[in-house]
Length: 53
Image (cartoon, one colour):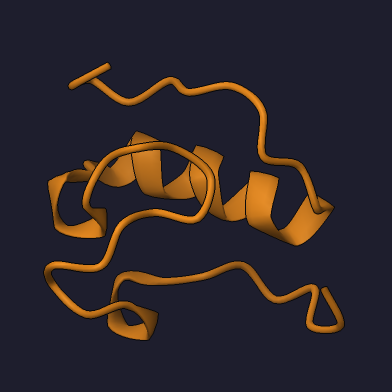
């Protein structure tokens, strides 16, 4: 993980799975995107706060 910049919705294709949780990126709401982007930037793949989870 060389780039510490958090992911944004425009960084992902609609059907792409989130690299942190088992949900498609397009299903993330604003809080989900923020949490998962922070987890990506921090290099962690544990936990999920997605509303769908």
